[in-house]
Image 1 (cartoon, rainbow, N blue to C red):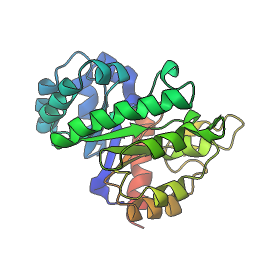
Image 2 (cartoon, one colour):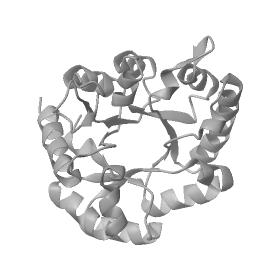
Image 3 (tube, rainbow, N blue to C red):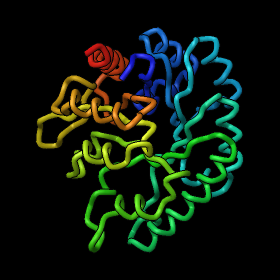
Image 4 (cartoon, rainbow, N blue to C red):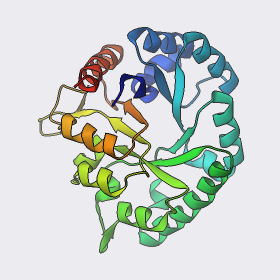
Length: 251
């Protein structure tokens, strides 16, 4: 991981962006992040956001785009990515009714293949972001295994959330090795040792970062995106994660 590959998922600061998107982007830039990953655009247009991040000297490493936007208008999604100067469009979550059994997941994979092909034609990369439920048993298999098997490796990639993989009972290191060249992005958050295995800023928990980052580097990961779903003090946690990631990048 190089320092210029570090990004911040804005879901961590969702309360702040809801109040003041431009001001929050300015704070993220001042803290030192070279890039952000969007989780919605607030009340601003992609063009407005592009103007803001250009003025701040930061880039858009990716954008999370909800399932219904993919279903109703994948072409519009691609247009937004071009406007933002963003090469990575990510599906962040699939509604439960589209992942209840293996047949539904295979149908989801067909949609991902279709959207991914449209993205590839326009020089955008489609990635699927995991949580923990992909690793729960689904008959004789798992949702994760079905997605990997049924999606086209040339058009569907993965944003591997290392915390959620581990939370779901799997080991992220073999996944990084087995899916090398299909994982352009990873999410980094740390795991507490408490009973809930709460998420923490990078460097404050039990995740084996040295070995994970070595595996991610070997897999050709392009962006290392810090995120917390449940920050204690969002902007302070954002700062803490960046400090730790900078230290890890220098090792």
